[in-house]
Length: 218
Picture 1: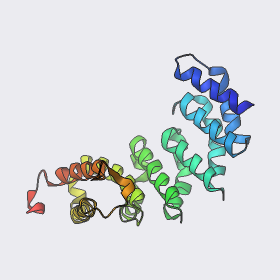
Picture 2 (picture 1 turned 90 degrees about the horizontal axis):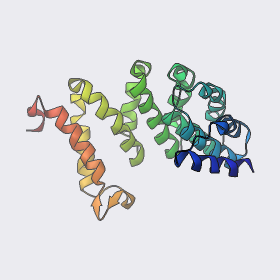
Picture 3 (picture 1 turned 135 degrees about the vertical axis):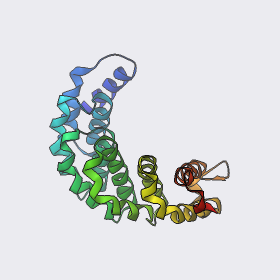
Picture 4 (picture 1 turned 60 degrees about the vertical axis):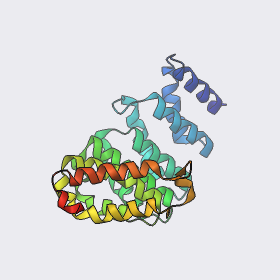
């Protein structure tokens, strides 16, 4: 029943009507519900609240618990909400758990962990300076989705300091060759074009790396 009411509250918000009465119930649903109810609760929280909303602090312990769960769905839900909205001051509390997920056997968990770290890098770059080596591991991940997710972080870092990543030119070129050569799964194709958005991301990265030193591409 509460899940259905939460879905209706989300529709109200999307149509422009304030449903602030439902905010606390969204958090309670994420904390105490079944898996389906938790999904609705997490989704509602990500829609209703922003990173600075005071109610979001009530969700921190739930996120910590779900990140340590053996249920993959619960871990995915927690990583999703962390990558969308999470209090900046609470990043140190979840960072070790998110970092740990970079070595998870399930690729979807590794992928969501990379996206969560990308979010952390955007709002608090100093918090993730110590794990740049693990970003490189994600770039070489056997799952193309994890590798693709890591490019968001690299594009941001290279825009800020291209000289620090010149040694990765060869890796980016190799990935681009694999993409153009159709080495990725067909799921990445769009109208028979191999991963066009991934190609554009790689070309942006290479243009930044070669802008001041074209000898790398000669």
